[in-house]
Length: 351
Image 1 (cartoon, rainbow, N blue to C red):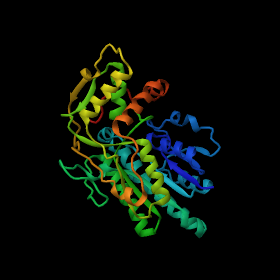
Image 2 (cartoon, one colour):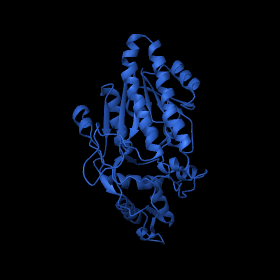
Image 3 (tube, helix red, strand yellow):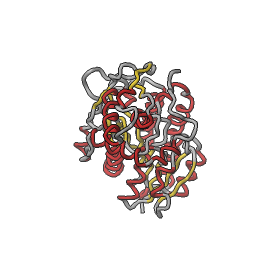
């Protein structure tokens, strides 16, 4: 039976990937996660006792831990999600982003290089390292055009700069050491189990509670939104059918202005939770000082993964937002536990 080591499997996207693997595939899943503030084992409660699931608490930047997991679990693949991912936090404290995103990825790649070099040739031939990255490495688009796999890198934040560094390391390990690496760059994800520092869950929860709905700058920044379950299906296709050394952009073909995203959420919350004393929720929208270095527009051209691997998103934005709002309404215990720590939905990233 194949074994997949998933780094950051207690995070938002990683936990979705773990749940999908255990529900639909026949592989073992080993979740290696440090359990930072955004790592939440509640997101994996439904699979915590699954016979093909193993959890290991550990830091990807700790070489001994990484090598021990590889030697003990004998993976046929590594799917690398683990990262510090919030742009605002990277502005306030970039050092941890450098340590985890750049140095942590290096430790994983180098440990994988050693591991592949020591296992039998038939197992080494099958091994894959899937590095999951972001469209933010490409920087900001003008009013037209889309990011392709050949777009030049132009990161704007400490977060995107450290992810760009990790991307370059991953490709270098393929070219120099022939480590069978695949790289994906995805657009903005949304869906259940996302930590409430990000735009969509923060807006949902604040709208329910009658708190201000902060919109950065003029609200005209554009993002391409991708439902998390669609993203994880794409990652499985890349892992199992993608060509080592290749990059695949994954997008939802769903460009939305930030202000329109917030207004859509307000409309759905008003509908699903009628009678709120502060309704309509759109009255809570508050324009706030913009983020330093805030990219204006992202848009992903996902034609390569559609053409070569047959993947395309299944959720349009309205349906995905409705599912997401409903999930937060129905999972108040998860929300309470996720919000009970240091982060209390305050503004970050003002440097």
